[in-house]
Structures are given as C-alpha cells and as structure tokens.
Image 1 (cartoon, helix red, strand yellow):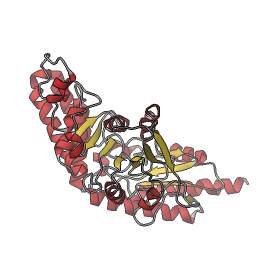
Image 2 (image 1 turned 180 degrees about the horizontal axis):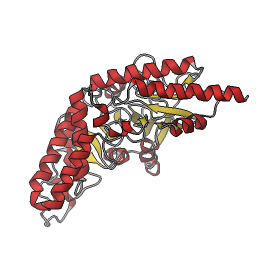
Image 3 (image 1 turned 60 degrees about the vertical axis):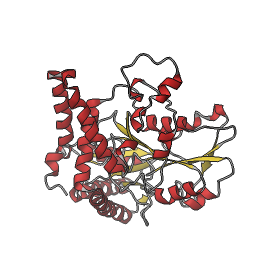
Length: 392
C-alpha cells in the first residue's frame, strides 16, 4: 500500500473522506495526467492528434486489464447510465419479453429497462430473500424462482449502492449462461475496489462510471461488450467514429455503414471522446492496478470490519451484509434512537464526510482511508449518542 497517502490524496489533509460511493477524490497522478493533456491541447492542439490517440489506446489497455478482458471489448462512455442504455438497445426485444430486476436498484439500472415497456417488455421485480434483509442478495436460487419462458435478461448491480450488498456475479453469470439469459452488470459501486472479471462472470454487458471507486473525474466511464455481441451489426448510437472510414461522406445507406463498422467496442464511441477525462481515467486505473485490486480489497475488508464491529458495540444497526462475500466497501448503519441526519451533520461539522441514503448513514471506505479516520468517525458517533442520552 502507498505510504504517502496524504501526498497522493490531498483531500486527506482536509477531510476523513468516506464518500467514494458518490464521488471518489482524484489522486494527484490523475490530476497531473489531466493537466498534462490539457497542456498539450493548449500548446499543440490537434497537431498532436497522435498523442491524443496514444493516450486513449493506453487507457483502453489498462481498462481491459482491470475488467479482465480483451481491449477490443472496451468502449468509453460518459457514465454508467449511458452504457446501460446502449445495452438495453442492443437486444432484439419481443412482445411480453421479461426482464428480472432486483428491487431498489439505483435509477441508472432502472430507467433504461423501464423505457422498453412501450415495446411490450415487462419488468419483474426480485424481492429480498429473507424478512431480515433490506435488499435482495440476488442469489441464483432466487433468480431461478422468477424465470419463465419469457425471461430475456437479468440486470444487477455488482454492489448495491445503498446497503452495500455485493452480488456473486460469477454464479449469476453462470446461471444466466446456462439458461440463455442476457446478463448485464452495473459495476460502478465495486469496480476499482473489489476483484471483478467480465470474462469469468460471463457478462454480456458491463457499465461503470469512473467517478466513484475508480477515482476519476465525472463524465468518464467504461462499457464492456462481450465478443459475441460484436458479431451483431447493430449500433444504437451509430456515429461517424463507429466506422473504419470515418472521414468518408459517401455513405448513402445504413447497409453501407454496417459494412464498415469497426470490429471492436470502439463502434459505440460515436463521436469525439472526452480525451482529458480518458487520460485521467487511465492514470487512476494504472494506480489501482499498481496497488493491486486484491490488496485494495483486503485493505477495505480490514477497515470495514473495524468500522462495523465498533458500530455494533454502540448499539448501531449495521444493515450492510458482512458475511461470506456479500461485504463491500459500503457500510450503512443507523442508531435506533437517533436521526441519521443528526449523525451525518455531526460528522460533517467535524470534517468527516459520509452520505445518508434511505435513513441510513452510508460510509464508503476505500484503500486511501486509514484506521485513524475510522476511529475518528466512531468517536464522533459515540459522542453523538452520549449527548443524546444526556438530553433525554
């Protein structure tokens, strides 16, 4: 692990920052990469177009390592929702086709699928498997109970955004593959913090914005397309950079464009991309890969265990699953006698940054956090509880 965390993550000099579930802080190398690219734009502009493209190529290769796939399957998108929308439009839908969605997914993984209802597509909502669970675990057994001969697709978050439940996407992917069900993963709340393999989970499509656990600027993101879908001559967002002869203006029909489609996921990058953002994204991914995703996950596991254990001694209810491999970097909790907004505001007043979701204080722990910050948060929660008890 990095020993000079305060230098690499300057935000630590101001805050104990537990908000990567909303927006992660960019590390200094990422800032430097964006600045360097902007300097090229300022001083050389398009005379340095070769440099622009080399940055995109390097970032795509790094992203492929992160996703455990071939670079040919990686496209850049502006956010998670854009990738999921593309996935929703890649599939040939029929009347009464069904989509299985877990209840309480983040809206980015709801709206693209709901928008298919005018085509006759139906959403079937997966409920929590047990009464003591706030959110579905999304096990293959639970999914299996909902499958019919009309089931076309399962879309699931790798990590649930509010309670932090991590789903076993490998087991789910194997189930979907065996049952001829399209498998789509919203990976934004886990990619960069937990091991993930698009190949091993047999995903058809994976989407992830870069601004959370990937520690990149807003407006950056990754879209994985499995090789079999690259055999389909269909691009919902067909644009001039979707073809291998982009400067040609002699296309007179879609069939001519179709014949010229790029043979990679680059076909989904319909126009000029966010070059500075991609440069920054590449620097962040390289930092994460250098640290090692397994090492990062191990660090997060130790810190979240420290946090969850201490919260339970204070009679707080930890709603985030902590058993087996359902844990993630998100620890959400509440105290039965305190308003979570009071806890949140007390923390914020003391430069400890969290969020509140559905009445739970959500603490997002990344590898740049440390034991001192965890203990600071715990001390403030304990103090808030004590003050409340004295006032009763």
